[in-house]
Image 1 (spheres, each protein chain N blue to C red):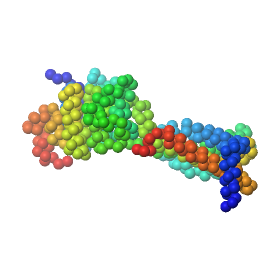
Image 2 (cartoon, one colour):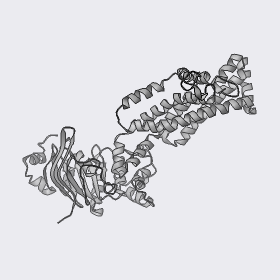
Image 3 (cartoon, chains in turn yellow, brown):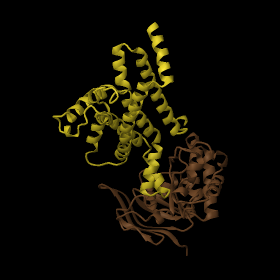
Image 4 (cartoon, one colour):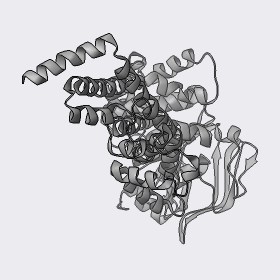
Length: 232
Length: 243
């Protein structure tokens, strides 16, 4: 128990004093996860909305693919991205393996189906009579679509939270495609693995506390953004 | 002679092979309350969707305010915005009562809508609930909000699809009073679809009976109930037509 208390005390000290390595790792994690989540949201929310609102040929196949994507094991995604970006792979010419770009790609593949899938479910969950009633009040087709999306907003926010949660805490794919290179591709989760193996529990605990803190802050912010809706 | 708000001629509506509506001729006069009665599945709600231009007839045409449906394309927005429907089960937006009532005005880009919203809420007796979340209202209150959001946009035609079904007697009489008041004061043309033959008797100037998608009989309310010409209408009035 002594190691844990000592590690915890030192971890808090590292956080409070703004340890440079800790800061650098945290900022890189935020950058990689932030860009991946932004992309997943910008593409996933419109796609999920479209899937929820429209019926078209091949829709069921797309839904099955999305649901499959929601359950992708990160390490398998990492393996896939690794093979694509490796020197012998089809996208090896980009030279992105073991760079933050590779980590962003793998995190997009993990979070995008979650954002799109949960958004689709949220849109489909809106009472189908709403659209007709809104049209009856004089809405254009576009205004009616926006009204349906507004009603699904809680679900859409949940989809983004789910996407964030899935990538801020994942270690398998970023370890594979990033390589955990100090000062370059080392992020919070890969650093926790490394520091724990090295016996640097203080740094590992500090990193763990930051992951938990970020997750908490992100969720609190999302809740704040959607106002009172969860109280209804 | 009164002016017709709607003229329907040889209007049919089919879904696949199934024809659900076939109206040879029906005029709805401006400023009247037309009660449309008939059993479930007789095509009443389909008729309302056509009158609201939410759907197009399969054949025939509907004439309204200088616009004639041609079977293709949607009705122009300015035509659609002259008509609105209050549905049997209103779906309110997940926001305040005020925002729900203001919604139709926002769609039209109306400024200074506050007075109109409160006026509409006053009509339905829900001024005190303006800031309440709409989803916390009772069924009767929700229906009154649906009425308020319809009448705030001052439609030329108000279509009511079983507006008091499943409501308690107190709310039924409240809503009937609002409908009567609206028609008397604003001369809004109202088409009321109802299962309740007594409600049609209480509110309508004329009554039309729909059976299997066809208008069997239409006439002034007193006449319709006292001297039905068609034997099926007579059976309906006597209560022999079970539905």
